Amino acid sequence: MGKGSAPFVCTVRGLTGPTVAGGMFFILRPDTERILPDYLAWVLGHREVFEKLHIASGAGVAMPVIRRSELEKVQPPPAPAPNPETDRRPAGA
Image (cartoon, rainbow, N blue to C red; front, side, top):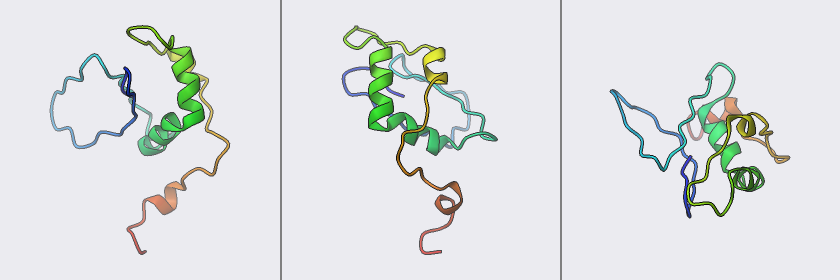
């Protein structure tokens, strides 16, 4: 999850060794037995959730910080969520 004037959310895969993320990122390591990383990125990047997190992080401050307690309060938005079963199928299957 990126910080700054143009924040964004993404899923990173395929890291094969020690990796350093710059100070502009929040690093989240979800329990993949409980939630798919792509679904978590979708939820965090959803406009409603993102706006709530932006306000909670101290919108307008030089270096925003999102407390763990704020992340734990996040609920999926009231929109149809991606279906993990169909999302894992190859295109056209």
